[in-house]
Length: 89
Image 1 (cartoon, one colour):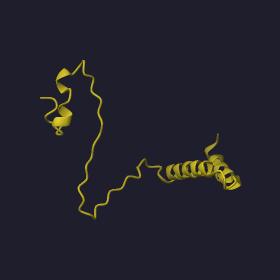
Image 2 (cartoon, helix red, strand yellow):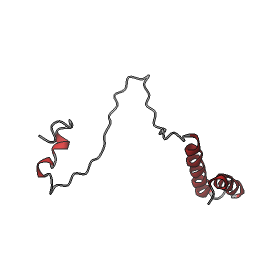
Image 3 (cartoon, helix red, strand yellow):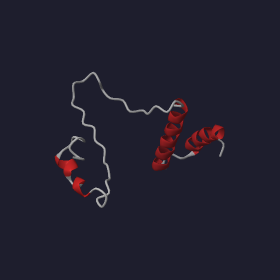
C-alpha cells in the first residue's frame, strides 16, 4: 500500500465507523497516531521524555539474556550486583 494513501484511508475508515465499535475506533486512532508520529520523526528520534524539572530518582533497567552454557559464572550475579563491573570478574 502506498504510504500517501494509507493515512487518509485510516482517517476515512475511522470516521465512517459507528460509535458502537469502540475498540475498532481506538485501534484505528492508535494506528493513525503511530503513523503521524513516524511522519513527524524522520530523523529517528524517539518520543521518550524525562521530567528533568522534578527531583525524582530515575531507575533505568534493561533485561539482558546471557547464555548460561557459555558464561556459567554470570548466573544470577546481575540481581545481586547491579553494577556491570561486577558481572564479568
